[in-house]
Length: 291
Image (cartoon, one colour):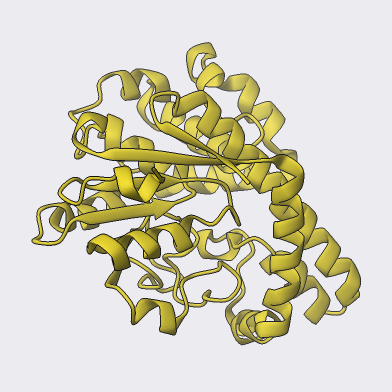
């Protein structure tokens, strides 16, 4: 009996997995066989400029089943896991079973474990944090975060370090303390069918490299060229894997071969961080090994 044969058509499905592991194809197969609406849970795929570079479903794939929360946020807009949860809530209450798929672990754990109601970061604190990160890097900020928060966050992710520092600076409480006061989740695990794909590392690395080559063939460079006039390297929408490297090429700072290799390496590192998160935070999910 296959995974698809075991899934109940009346319960939401959650699909997590590292980049290039085949999550979107699995979600589409489930939707075609059992019905349902496919809901994006990837923080990079929400931004309007990126279809090719973030491996969003193609227009042809979107025509095969309903897709929601893909490419709907314009650069410059404020968007966070809180925004995403508010958009997911009505989809969970809708008439079609939700098939929620993505590689952003924070989105999926917030959905199933709850999200702390942390006050917004004041602009002056955000400006201070941005300045320090640009001038010093993440190490000094990490050293100032309380021990409990430091033990929980992804210490290799500068954005997570900065977020934790901002919360502590603005509220006087550590991020961990806010998380411990979290409200009930929108979709507890016992009301869903959670699946996490855990591919073999070398198999995944080959897929990542081949996929980026295919992205270049499909027009990723033109996609990046279109955003050059408004490029903001520190902006959330600019974090698409491969975008900074292709911008560097278009600005004359890297050859296309060097940009391609650097982007592939960045994607492999991103996949490594995702796998670490999934192993740490998704022990209760059904693990499907690949290939």
